[in-house]
Image (cartoon, rainbow, N blue to C red):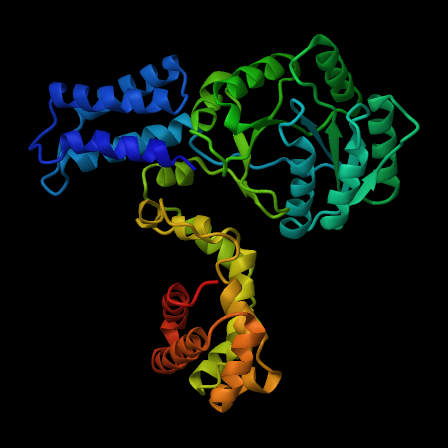
Length: 444
């Protein structure tokens, strides 16, 4: 996400590179380029103009420390202003109702139904809530079936009333059902339209008035740019929603919606969708997003994703095995599975400071570990637990089973052996060595 904007901003800052001090002339030149970069990212002209004027005012009012270059200072000021533009601080979801009711609104095709299931998964796994999904879209063909399928994927019950065409009644009955069955959260997925129309607005307003939700979230496709912002304003004027959800932020998006919505509707972005998987949903943190836009990575989010997969008891057991030089291919396979649960590999690598730009033209997909896993799974349980028995004939059989070459099997085993030795000598740095090993593993 934001690759084009990040590149343009980096080029803008180079105007100040080598300058001894900030002047009105070189700041004006830099910010003219920054404004163009924002406009190209589909940020509205008014927002881009106000943004650069605020940056200019702060840049000319700053005193340059001898240890800080003008370019570095400008990056900091732009970073701070980007953070402010996107809301400044994270705004958490209101989840204290009994039951807590969350109403989902948006246009057809924005990803409302998928987001509803993702949110259910997020609340169940991270907040330990018992969630009821409500199929309130009575118009779109197969909408109810879609929510049922997604609900099954995230182990959330779905309330439906196929005989009713009254979304207000369906929502009210669902809340009664939730109260009598001890659900802590009710997520009501509503109908969308291809465009904002009066009938749609009257219906969603009636549903909101009836169920009195603790949160109304507006879901918008970030790939639609300024159209997303205009739609958000139209909905907010009628619904006065509490927050925005940007979907498809991992797609071919220029980022204008993320940078403009808060300034236009004065409502926070609460979540961003970053893929089709049910766990591909992130809480929106303005500062972390500003970090990523300016190529600083997002190490905090990376650590949080790792912690979600972290098992303290398993880690202690693994540490003991490493110390005794007993780390084997079963352990390695387990670590790969944990990394894959964290999300898209390229996105994860992009969270490491400086890696986003380096990986810009590198094709890393979700099957990055496919070749390694195939080789390990082609081993017998004895071979995985005791790699020293892997002789020539065994390696040929493994290569045939994995659909790869003996050379690649040999490369994996050699690198695994070297890494195991390093991990024993430097057990505290085992994770670092493992990542180095993974980068050099054979691909398929």
